[in-house]
Amino acid sequence: MNGKVLVTGGTVRLGLAISSLLRERGFEVFTTSHRPDSGADFILDFRHELPSSSFDAIVNNAALFRGSDKDLMRVNFLAPKRIIEARLAPVVVNIIDSRVMSPGFTPRNAYEKSKALLLAETLAPHGAVRVNGVAPGPVIAPVAIREKAGLLPFGRPAPEAVARAVAFLIEEPSISGSVLAVDGGNHLSR
Image (cartoon, rainbow, N blue to C red; front, side, top):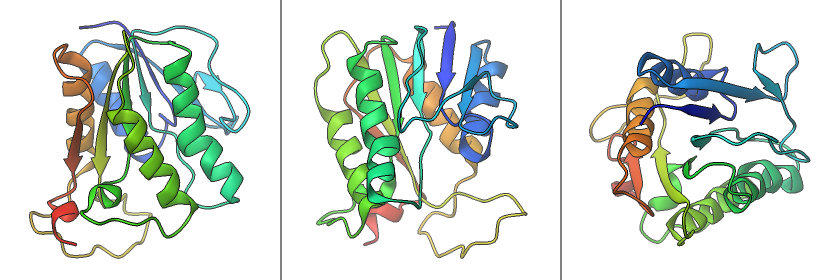
């Protein structure tokens, strides 16, 4: 499958890796950001807006990690849910968080709750829209970002590993309602 793909939050970190790999594979990629200086194709604030075009696939990557509970819920869960319900694309890949896949996981904050709800939405049937997810754990961060590496059973994945999982789910027409954990086995070690 080649075609038009929208990657929300597609100009930095994971979004940039996903956008770059999809372009390499021949997709026409459009990106969003909330920052006017980002170089994104669409400047959108997912707390209030959705894209107005339709696409062949959408990667719901945009996320807030901090902020008000209301904003975290709007960007991390409600915007992806509205994108799916608006049928802006027949294929959607949601970027979740591998922590919410851990056995016995209980959300401790608004970020974790929003990602747990996005996981449930990903696993629900959506008729003619094929919805899947990729659940990264701590990925190798750019040098400018300092964060604890942590110990992962199979090593910390690179952003490109997450991007390959996204591309696979976009390109494989027989998969729906599935989530690929790209987290070095982190979701199994809790």
